[in-house]
Image (cartoon, rainbow, N blue to C red):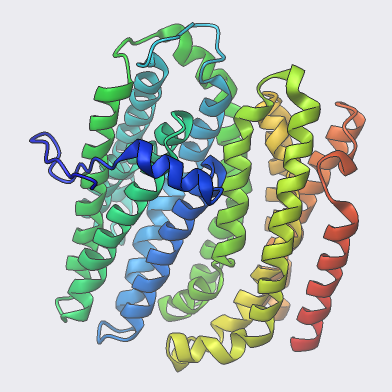
Length: 453
């Protein structure tokens, strides 16, 4: 039987029977990629379930809007640089100029932890200064604490990924997201108010932070290297800028809606503008997990074939499900949430079209090959297209026009990357994109959207 040991350093630290579970997972073909995909689905699924619970309680649309506003500001302040730091760290792990490690403990883990922690402190200081000028942010003190503990905690699943601990990725996700659901949704269900739910967010983030410290103690060598930090920052900077601009869709969209409409309309927009979790999370998880495969130029052909085959499998799974949701979302939304969010279904359907661009992965090999500047330039183009089209379309189609602009802008970004791979790296799209299959599914998805819309 699997035994659970309690460590005084972290009460929730759970020791699975790793060897036994690894054999079981290998029999059912669970890899690091599928493990990370499962983890990301748990993350989004938990947030979705919490949102559903909120709509079934008496907290009210305005309180839900404040909760979404809280998450929106936290993501706006942190997600772009966290993504950039982590994505640039993956090809640097075991393949950098500063360390040549063959030991179990890796100094790279400690250095990336230090970097993220310092940036978290910097964000908190900037927000504190900003708050002196603009004091309308809800639950501000909790927001600062949330950023401090939640930002470094994003490293946990990637430590497990790089150490090939797929069992732990899954176990960690099940435990922490189950706790998150209880302590965030529970207060609203009991009628305690939104403040207690947001306090629950801070508590689960603190638990994940302690979990990370335990992992660092086990897997990291506490050796600070300014040379490695310099190398990491140099590679990460274009990706940080790219993540900021590439994620601009939700930020630009959110600010435009907030500027033109009230918080209730903002909540309606946010509940629709979430993308389909299976698509965005499974696609991003697969892309991230495959980045280390492209860190060696000698294995490029093999890695491209793996990427194409994985894309094909993902397309067979995700496109049909997306089409089904396009057809039934307008029926589902008022029933899953409540009639106040019926209009969210229209926004959701538009965002479902992002699958066409999501299932093309030219950026995976670019990041793995450390061609991060072109990633940044394409994201700049996406930002410009998104801003221009959003400002224009919101005048004619309201919040629907903002969503349409996001879909177009994201497609422009992927096209630039595909062209660069072909023209500069001499890597044809067919080497990593199953073009006939992808094209057929894309046309069917567009046809379903046109009929329903």
